[in-house]
Amino acid sequence: MRDGTGRVACGLVLGLVMLAGCGKEVVMPLGAPTTSALPSTVVGSTSTNGATAILDEADPRSLAQLGDAAMQAGKLAEALALFERALKLQPDDEEMHFNAGFVCAQLGRTNEAIIHYQEAVRVLPEYGEAHNNLGNLLRRAGRTAEAIRHFELALQHSPASHSAHNNLGTALAMEGRVAEAIPHFVAATDSNPGYAEAWMNLGNAYVQVGRVEESIRVFQNALRANPQLEGAVRGLARAQARLGAGGRAPTP
Image (tube, rainbow, N blue to C red):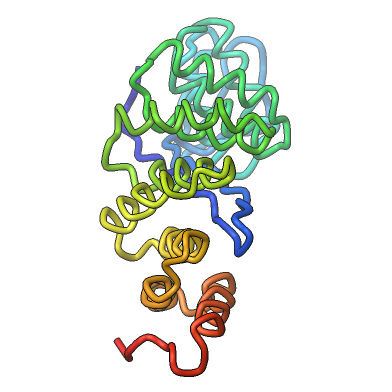
């Protein structure tokens, strides 16, 4: 079952021609560091303070704990093997599927990652973070209509998710539905005023629908949040050029 561990799914970034970059799903796992040896009965795991915990391989939660630790240590192949063994013992655990999906995505095994996230939301349909990450992978696979549905489900269950709002806005814009995307970018920036990529996406969307003057202040907000965001720098320059030399927005 879910343990309350915080997880964040990074938003997709909308470029100057409304092309989305690929966001990376991030998991903040819990658990003690693991050893690399995986005997068939009982494994010893050395914790961060040097103590040794005995973990029973027949217990899926023990295997999942080792998988979390391996994932945290960057040992992704080892982590995936542990999660898969745990899932053979407890196949309807949404957290194990979520973590296995994350690891598969990091390893470039997108189709397997999609299957694990699909299983996670099958077991727990209200799992907003899993819907959001699944949507990102489906979008990456060119399955934008399916991605939109999962972003909508993510927001149904986690309506304040700034990441899901930004991702849904991005997917809608990719489908040419820019006017529908704008309220989601607005919601993302309302929820997280420091979300530079969402400000940039909103600015690009405004340019697309002819609201160029409004876009200038929005791009400036993006650059206040992240002065190094190149897409926002280019977007601001483009918007100012469209308005002419006298069309720069007032100094904030």
